[in-house]
Length: 514
Image 1 (cartoon, rainbow, N blue to C red):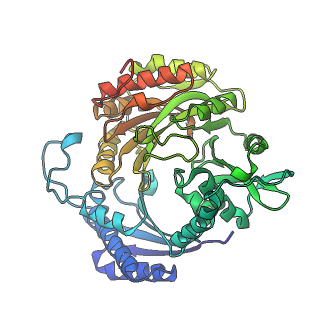
Image 2 (tube, rainbow, N blue to C red):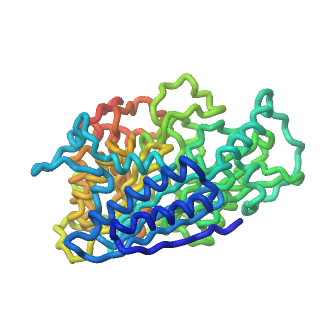
Image 3 (cartoon, helix red, strand yellow):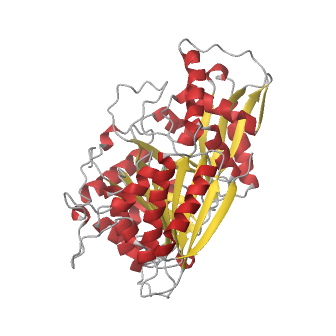
């Protein structure tokens, strides 16, 4: 796997140095293989990001620097603008805020005809991915990702190679032995083709239709990728462990078997290999996320040991899942049933549970066969250290996530502002807030979020560095829970509870108890 090329430019946060910053971005972009309008768009994005830092990160004449990082990867260019100024800069998300002495409601932040947010829109249209992260004492950064020329061509190449194979029934491969092992770089294209053959272009992780995207995830340690390889060298199947955060769990995901090799227990061998790898890593367990439109997938996940504990509602745009016979189903954003399987004796869950959700949370932990010790709900005293959270937006999924690492109720206005901008400016159709249950400020942040239209969606075991995550969700459009097809009684009970919470939050939901 090829290494990336990394460069950095550190400059004082002074607007007169803009030309230097744009020159750096131009040179890095051209070195990466971009040209013409793409380079000009990135220069404009750099101008928006850099001048905003100069104007807002260091107030009252405070001196400070901006660190611009340019990383050229095999399939993408990453530009990172980092400063150690104010912990949060809402003006970066909305270039001009309407002046008002009254804090606006969630519904009325963006008035018709208002041009606020132009800065972020210019940035967003220049790149393929945008994320902004609050690093606590280490400052904050705006990260821009631009795919490089040839990536789309490779996808088209894979499409062109795969399409003729599906015009007629795929012939079964001869019976043979299979080796299950870690992926090798030269096998990435075969895996991408298998994903297309099995799912069409309905799979939610777009990186797996691009060999470079897949290998980048492996190279950065965010994915452990295993393949089943036939004696003739064909890649017959793939499965992986996704672990984007340094937490003691991983998601068992990216499971696919070539149509030519099905019915040979290939997925069983991949599952066993990944479970063994997870045990070597001393992980508590694995998350499984079957789609809610396919009960058989849920049943298989539960038979493997997964137990429902949350609903990842409206997680991705509507999909036409190839081979599942779902083309006649109502079209709404696809959801996932979050399940968790333990690989070791579950530890006692010591959690700060919001009072109104305590009964349901205890039912979830009972379903996980896990003891729970609710901690007292006591007011927290500020200790002087700021909270730590990150904000990310996936343009392809139209999904925003606010991940709170260190809960601080004093930062609610910042978190709330980010949630609003994700919908009103970035165009998110769904926003999640993940709160660490081991921390005393979580019940307060939960209450504030629910007042702003978020609702309870479940528990994500070991999703935080120090324990479990409480998932809260806000949807930008009505969502019909009645379209979910859930396999187990507990999954349906969880859905009923979430439906009542959706209704309380003011979002219509259907179902027997909604």
